[in-house]
Length: 395
Image 1 (cartoon, rainbow, N blue to C red):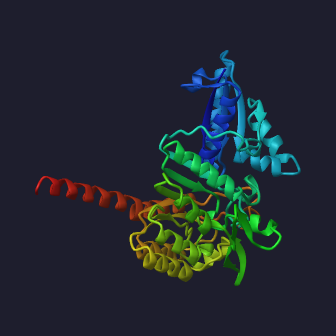
Image 2 (cartoon, rainbow, N blue to C red; image 1 turned 90 degrees about the horizontal axis):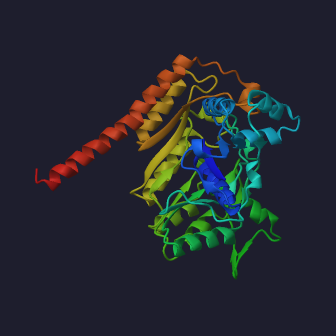
Image 3 (cartoon, rainbow, N blue to C red; image 1 turned 180 degrees about the horizontal axis):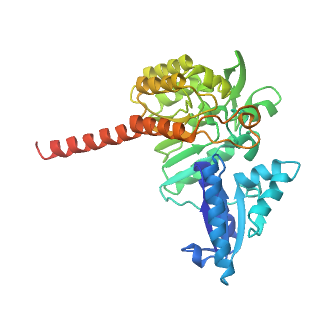
């Protein structure tokens, strides 16, 4: 028997798919070279935007057509679509999925795929390491708290043990993954008796970061990064994603003091306008974001920043969009993941705001930012490459 996994979405979904592959291998399945050779096809879904959901529907439709032509294949759906459906206590969403995708044989919550088996790595030199799952932030546009649930951190020692295992295998590059890595361990600290955390014979006092004007969010993330840096054989450490509102001074210090930690930091801004940020339930202002960037660059002079931006959020005016443009010019991101606002079910924006920006306007804004950041960055990289070649040839 052979399996095939189709993954839609982010690095967290890719890491989940590696665990799905491992669970299949443990049951004696082999990996199919193509979807046409598979007995089981697992679709790991994303629903951060409607376009991602539409791609899932199209993929399953094609599989259903193949089955009508006599091909025997079992179709299993997992990931964010299923996550939201099982959290809908009315059962309406699961009924809708079954109606739209009658060819699906099983709906499997990703939580059922645990950490009992080592993930089957797709890259022999790079390991994706989930450190937490879910999110507590409830940005008004974001569906993640409904697809993955509230934030839950993996035990500190479990992550360290996994990274030590990678080092022994010769894997020296790890990427730590969470919906918000900065708040890693907040739930572990809150479960402890005295607000501290035990790791072996060490007692860790968490870092507290401000939320709504008070020190409310305890995090172990700076300690986790530092501990992984101590593992012999781990030479490069990356992490995604982090939020601006709880990017602590201690985290900046940990990065600055450990050269193994990547100097490329992904720091989603979403908008350069404070009013839009407030509507998004992002807990920082434009000025606070810029101040954080200045602080990071002062401590880590060689840092490179990438970001996420949403254009066409409900009510976004031309002037508010221009403030995003000006912020981008001020910061000089090396990469921007730009998306047009997509209305998502169950979110606050869906229930309280009107998706009132025409598609043509969203597309124009998207093209402008893409040209400003990504095409400019690509041109600069090309120019640097040509310069290096010229120098090498003595020109």
